[in-house]
Length: 199
Image 1: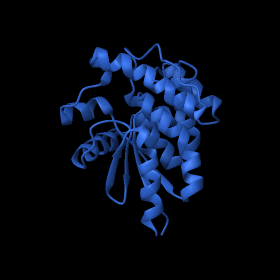
Image 2: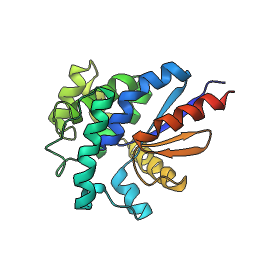
Image 3: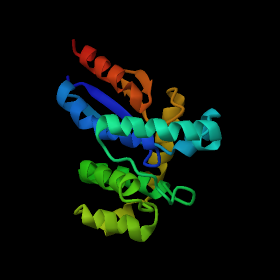
Image 4: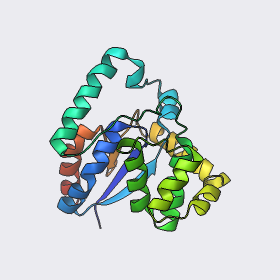
């Protein structure tokens, strides 16, 4: 049986983006299959009583520098998104379910994370969302329709609730054979767990 890695993510989360950039290498080394699980982190915080680091000034200042250190270690670009205060992240999160249905998850994830952390795009704005999809070779009309479907809306709510029920409190959260790992800086432990899964 293939090793499986559940990846609960939110496109608003810089640590999640950093983790995402490291998945190709992790997959190559472990042969794992990644199951992408969108969740609404603000909703998760409400369910669990957690707070965003942005709401704790000292932590926010420290975390910004720390994330840039990790970006340099990984050799990737991590830009600030100037739209963060007004960004409506739920439509792009719903879009991840549509992408999965259409077999377009890889292209969709790359487009959303690139827009968010490299190109400084308001990925929740309908025109920007459509442009990113078009540039990635995806059908903007299909996604515009898909994210309004009741089952897709319910799927995001259910995924967020499931994350809380399983012990998650922030993004990114990983599960390997039921064991939970939180944070992009725990990928070494995630990799060890994946290699042990089929040992």
